[in-house]
Length: 493
Image 1 (tube, rainbow, N blue to C red):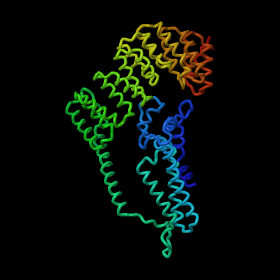
Image 2 (image 1 turned 120 degrees about the vertical axis):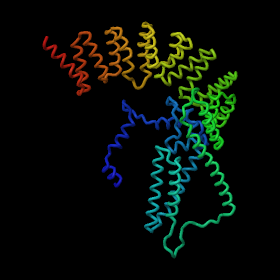
Image 3 (image 1 turned 60 degrees about the horizontal axis):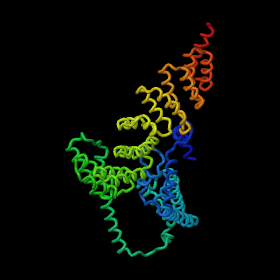
Image 4 (image 1 turned 45 degrees about the vertical axis):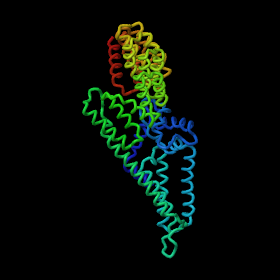
């Protein structure tokens, strides 16, 4: 009640706005967590018993990612799904068993207690633990060090408060005393603590060195002295944290810019430390190709795609490599996959293919059955004076609307503007009528149709369209003004 009242006092608007942002323009839930959870089911299915290994979600997830792009998901944003992914059924069983034993045993003792201080402290501790566990359904609470430590502090506090006696004449606790060989255990614990301190200290200092160069943009124009300083920082980071692959990869990239012939070893080391990183595999493959090992390069480039299956950059570089090797047919197939992942960048692919000497027919074969790629190709054909083929492409693009979700008005405007430039008003009108059939509730499309009716001197049809717009959007002032203008003109006549 206190929580509800306090939230109500400060206002519910921020909460409602947060939930509204979960929906896209079409009213569908667009929360990325749901996609990550769905993809994680395939990880669990492939590694059901022992999982992929603790801390490996960041590395293994790109192989199962269905969302196009090169974005990084370090965690599953669900502690339980991540536990199943990384530790499998065994780890999940042990984790749940620990919680059940802790709650059940401490609650049995709690039920017998009558000391108010102990009972209140127990309730508070259990409440804190439950809140963290509930939050873990939508986040990675227990993977954050501070939260994890706090959770186990509350667990210890719950057990202690359930068993502690405050009366001085009684034994101080219900817990049974167990003797432990402290001397031997202390020596072991001190050794483990020292090793952890050295290892984690190296990781921390390595991150500090790498953070100073991580966001630096490097190219052939970067001064030699700056490259040397950055290389030294990367080498120091890799020395302090020898199990981190990104430091080896970064130092190899810098050596490459410095003209050092030993870059192959750096890329090999990066792949050895992280053999499922698509970028590392790809870079090693390209380097192998430079040394004439084309067969091995091909396998590595394919592996890069396998372990980063939804990243268009992996497909793009492999396709370009195939083109350079004269394997055009294979390259076209891979390029088609790349374009399907990032259709908005079709123009860049068309430019690359033109520079590689592709004919218009070969470019057409490369395009996937998506709307944007064919619209981009139609624009290219129109600008190069091939109007007949361009018109075919604008019409062909509409055939692939069934493959798109959601359907966007932009799919139709490109063809509409093409016909307007050619002063082919009837064709433009027919094009927009198809748009209205696909998107009957879009006022903007109807506005373009009404405008075309006016240009073709069909005021009655234009007024009918403006009335449809006002039925959809009564506040559309432009449609109201145009309708009033036509009505006045018709009255004057």
